[in-house]
Structure formats: structure tokens, C-alpha cells
Amino acid sequence: MLFTRRNRAMVDATDALPGRAQELPVAERHAVLGTPLKGSFPEGVQSAIFAMGCFWGAERIFWEAGGVYTTAVGYAGGFTPNPTYEEVCSGRTGHAEAILVAFDSTATNYEEMLKLFWEGHDPTQGMRQGHDVGTQYRSMILWEGEAQRLAAEASRDVYQRMLQKAGHGETTTEIVAAGPFYYAEDYHQQYLAKNPGGYCGLGGTGVACPVGVNVSAGTADPARQRQ
Image 1: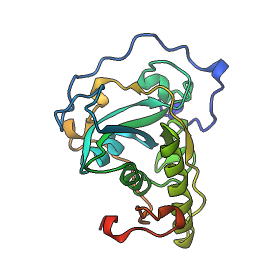
Image 2 (image 1 turned 90 degrees about the vertical axis):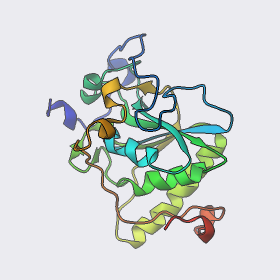
Image 3 (image 1 turned 45 degrees about the vertical axis):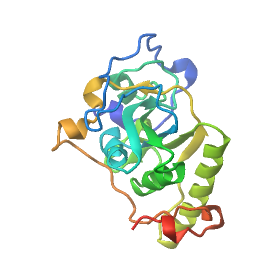
């Protein structure tokens, strides 16, 4: 399916695959964390959705982070309801490979999730991530609520300045309102835990992303910056 995995042109809604009404089945619990894969989540647990290339490696970045309650991989940002992996790879769903992150807001915060997002991939590559090429590999932040939108846009502006100082190009990350998150097939969930030698094509830029109360002004709170 190499020819389908290299489509860089977004499909129109009228040309997207029809999909299906039935959700793809997944396990009840996270293979690493042991927590429920789907909500409703406990009080104080908030969620975020990101797309940053192949979701196998992207999910691992978040489940290894402190304060994360659960993670899941799926498809988001497109048109086709409950698509299959093969359909997403065809470029005819409009979806990106995405990660749902549920985190304990008493132990971490959305800004820390943004830091992991920016540092975990190269957000300047358009419809690709490393050797993985296609619309499903594009960089996206899918915000839920005005607070997430403002935080996402502020972090993008700060990180763009840092990327430019380091000699990198413009970010191509889409920041859009979250629509439905469609869970991917069960074999994709926590894939690198089930297959420790599995493929991971992610690679960041090496540019650190600041977090903290002053991030929108371009300066980080050093007490909250990860080392």
C-alpha cells in the first residue's frame, strides 16, 4: 500500500469514504497503565487530542509521562466515521493518526502535554513526519474549549520563535476545534508495549519547548520547565 501512504492532497468531504456507524472494538483497559481506555474518566481528569505522525511512537511519549491517566490511538480531523486503518492510509478519509491523552489535572496540566507534543516530533514537515508521508501524518492540535485553544496558539507562537532561532522553518501544525475521536483497531493500542521492537518513525527537532505561566510572553517559568 505504499502508493496510498504518500498522498499529500487532502480529500474533500464529498469525496471521502462513507465509513460505518459501528465503532471499532478495543480492549477495556490500557495495556500499560491498566486504566480504562474510554471515558467517562474520574473527576479532575482532562483530555487532549494531538496528531504528530505515526501514532505508535506518539502514544508511548504520553503514557510514559507523569500525571497521565490513560492514552489511546485513533483517527481524527477528517470526515469518515469509524474508519479502518487501511481507509485512513488511503488518504480518502481526511483523518490524521491521532492520540487521545487523559491526564490528572492535579498532577500535570495541558501546557505540559503541549510541551511533549512540540518536542516529540518535527512540526515543520507538512503532510509527512520523517519517512512517513501522507495526509494522515500531518501535525495537529485538536482543542476542546477556549482555554485549550488559547494555550495551543500561545505555545505555537513561542515554539516557532525558538525553531527559527535554531534554523528551522515555519510550523505547519493545524490548530482546530476537536471533532469526533474514532478509536483505532485494538492491535494499534499501546502497540510499542505489545511489540517492543516495533517501528517508531518519530524524531523531534531537538529544540526545547518552554512551559509555564509566562509562556505567551516568550519566557518560561523555570520552576516548571522539564530538564
